[in-house]
Image (cartoon, rainbow, N blue to C red; front, side, top):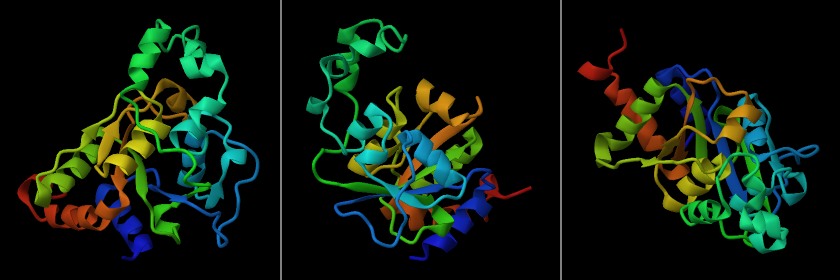
Length: 228
């Protein structure tokens, strides 16, 4: 599988304005990729990769508590009580009460801690590693076409992500479920990344990438998807 070619094809077929991001979890720190300099949030790492950076990060470079927890780099039990309970989110306006936070977390996905030591990020068309997940920031029409391409030969339906942080909804969920996942992102990530109001998000499991890109190309020859 030629990842770089697939990345270029995906860009051209969908006319994407933002580079798709390849994400890979690793047990050991990679030796052929530079380590991220300084700290950033998980969503900030996605933005860096969309802008062309290639790097890996560890718990030491993760600035966000949610990013560390949902991506599997830190156990929730290591956080202070107000984080474990979710109490800190109530005055921010994200939830009305601690019970609401707890109920929400029951439906959020995270990668089990203690397995991976690092996560690599790169623009898909420059990645030199096989990604676990490909994150795409796009418009609604482009997202719709990805979902159609996923269903084209499989009949599979994507997963709709809710208001969970994107490190959960757009990274951990497609990783754990192995399904194309779409959503709108959470308020903090959209603000931190400077995302346009009309932008949506789609994440593709790495194992589905070649099939979906191939389907997009074939769909371009059909009535509903022919380019004008």
